Structure formats: structure tokens, C-alpha cells
Image 1 (tube, helix red, strand yellow):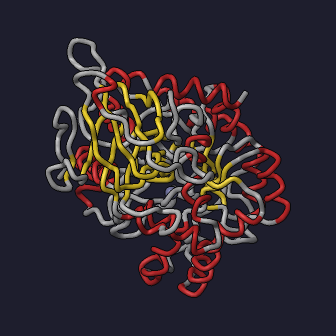
Image 2 (cartoon, rainbow, N blue to C red):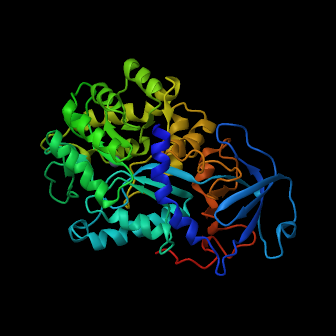
Image 3 (spheres, helix red, strand yellow):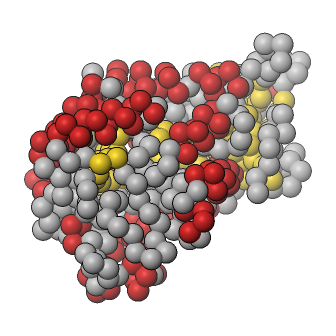
Length: 453
Ligand SMILES: [Zn+2]
């Protein structure tokens, strides 16, 4: 049931991308990739050398070995990745394209300036091999415009699924008054069931793909502690979730403590964001509901490097407390893996983050004890499944959308190989190529899509 509802959401998002890949005259361009190794089905062993046929925006076929491009039509282009390792494009399920922690006040308060900053960041993400993102909250709605611009190829960027404004209670996470120089939050206020329904419906009216709910406080605040009660009432979470379900939008719930995770999962959340302090009982609830955990280990490592910046404030945690959270959050992917929780992957990244954060997140999973093949699966096939798109995204398989990346070494043997992506195709269009037949390691496309920066 859930899957069918998500498929309806997906159907609305995909046609623009399909239309964008049509060549003038209606003929679909054919590209043949010779890949040295292919991670066709993440979680399973990679295949040896393959010829991958891409027609329009879809993968048409995989053939073992290298077959000449001319076999597939006179105008077929060949891309030589015969010494590279090919895998599905990375899927980052937790970004904030338009929340820039380093922005000056003029930018933070200007949707126009934020949109430009976010567009630049998104283009860099695509160049780094992130072909799909889920944006879990902005303050301005600019991510919805970016999503549509990327889908229509107006600008280069990943496929975006956007939650629009965070649905949060007054004074809760994402809703307290900002400190000086802090990015201001403008959530959709959810205080009591009626207003929670309204907040969700207003988001839906704006065209969001997901609903983001903050069921616990921020990891930086006391409401994000392991023993903290949820910051929203049960009837508020239930009302917001019911309004989301009515509109066929899945819910991503920000939750740290077991009590908050329990409430979110009991209300039908599809993904739990952060989830640092899940316990045995909530792990069982994850397994029963099939919900995915997005542990955001990168941001925990990042906060650790700036404890003084993030500590304190009216409801903040001191540096030592934050360090303990960071340690716990860094271990969460491994704990979740051992507990049998389905893992997806997200960074909590924004324009202030390095663009290889998604690749580094894979490395953090491995450091925490997740097998590399499963960490990559979290960043590809599982991400697609969490989005309800497991049958069109996240694998290299006939009928799937041609979102493909290549690296020089096997990331199963060396996860850090993902930090240097040499080839990016999204929707069947080459976005970046550093391969032997490319002109340097630069963004490019069939139609010379606009460059970045
Ligand atoms: Zn976040």
C-alpha cells in the first residue's frame, strides 16, 4: 500500500526528466558504456566487464564483455570506462540545499540569494556523483523551484525530492529564535492537531514530495537527549501524519530518543532521521514497520570539529555533552546494522559542507562496522527504496533510470574511492566525465548543459 502511494508521488516527479532527455526530432540518443566492473545490484558482488546500453533516460540492456557501439545503431556514442568501476548514482536522503550555515545575514534572509547558493551547491553535488537527494527542510520554498529546474534541465543538479518547510511546533527544533548570526528558521507551525493538519496541507499545496516532522529536539539541544520526551504531542504527530498520508506524502521524522522514535514509527514515519539513541524496543519497531534509519554520521563528525560553535545557547548542550552525542551518533550506523534495521544514507549537508560528504558518510558507516557493500547499498538501492522508487532507481538494471557513476577503484575494497568520481550520468545524460575520451575532468553534457560556478 505504502509502496503504491509512493509510486504515485514518483510518477509526478519523473515525466519532466523523461521529456528532457528526448533529442530534437524525437529520436532517443543511445550511449554505450564499456565498464570494467559493475555494481549492478548493490549488496551483491559486482559483475565483471559489461557493455551497458542506455537509450534516452533508461538503461536498456547489460551485456557481458565489451560489444562494439555500432551493434546498437549508427549514431551510438561509446564511453570508455573499461578501467573504471561503475555503480548507481549516490542517493543522499538528508540534505538542506537552501540552509547555509556559513551564509551572511543578507543571504540567509533572501530567497533569491539562497536559491543561487543552493543551485551552486546542488551542481557540485551532482558533479560529485550524488544524482538524487531528498531535501528535508528549507525555510523559503526555494528547493521546490530548484527541483523543477533540475528536472527540466534548466540547471544541472540532482533529482530532488523536497519536503519544503519543516513541520515543527513553536519553540521546538527548527523553531526557536535564532542566536546572532545563526540561520533563521521559518517552519510550518504545528501546535495542536488542527494546525498540524494545516501545516502539512499548506506544504502539500506548495508541491512538496515529503513531509518532515521534528518529533524530538535538535541533537544540539536538551530535547535531543537520550532520555528526552518527544517535543510534539501524540495527537499532533498523529494529525500531521494522517494529513500526510491523506495526501500520499511519506513522512521523514527527526527523532533522537527512544520515546520520540517510538512515537514517530507508531504514526507511520517512513524514515527516522538521526535516530541516535534507538534501543532494543525501537529496533524491533523498525524491523516490524520496515522503516529506514538515516543516521547522519557525517554531521556528528562535523559538529565534533566545532564544539565551541555548536555548544551552549538558551537550551543548548555543553561541549562535553555534545562530544558524547557525537561519539554515540558516529556509532549509530554500526549499531543499526547489527540490530537488523534497514539503513539509508544522508549527510545533513548544505552549501557549507564539502561536496564529497555523501561519499564520506559511506566511509563513516564502514568505520562504524557496516560492511562496505552494505554501506554502498544504503547510499543507492536502499535510498531508492525509501523513496518508493526501488523499481526505477538505485540499480544498474534494464528499465531503470540511467543514473550512473564511475570511480577508479572498487569502493567495496576502498570506500574512499567514492570521493573521486570520474563519470556521472543522470537521466541518460553525461554530466561529468574524466574518462579517457573526455576533455578534462569537468561537467559536461550532450547539449553542453550549463557549467557550474
Ligand atoms: Zn537535517
